[in-house]
Length: 193
Image 1 (cartoon, rainbow, N blue to C red):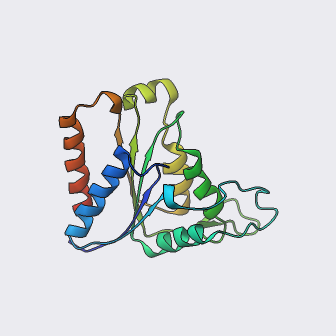
Image 2 (cartoon, rainbow, N blue to C red):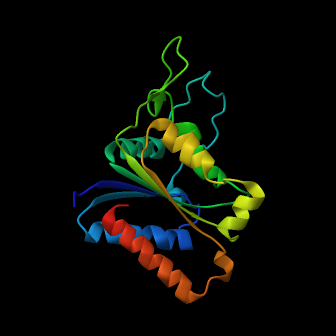
């Protein structure tokens, strides 16, 4: 198996959560199998998540957002862990992409064209999304709550394939179910899937 350069982003604003545990399992599996891993935790990142003037005025990136961009450029495989809150990702996680997923970094619109260039092609991604509601119920009531990240951010910039794993009904999981999920995520980390 070819070794990969993996960038893990823990997108929960609290590291001491089941998302943090799962990110640790993935990292441990990937490292044990010889993959090169870098990781950033949303909780430890310092930046203004608001793109105040859109693209009218340049808003300098804080050092953590520069490091985020460098890690994305460096990686072959991008891994994101986050919870679903009110049918979307946490606001601070969205702020990373609002601020750092910029024209010239993630995409480019050529003059006079209707299409765009995906500047992050050649990378794969996987999303691990948790919720307190069963994924099927979320989908039936709210539709695809992962589309913003999967298609609007990752696919738009050229990531392919993009795998998705949803774990729901977390408040009601027993220890045995959480352990089973941790083992699954560890194995996926070993395979860099």
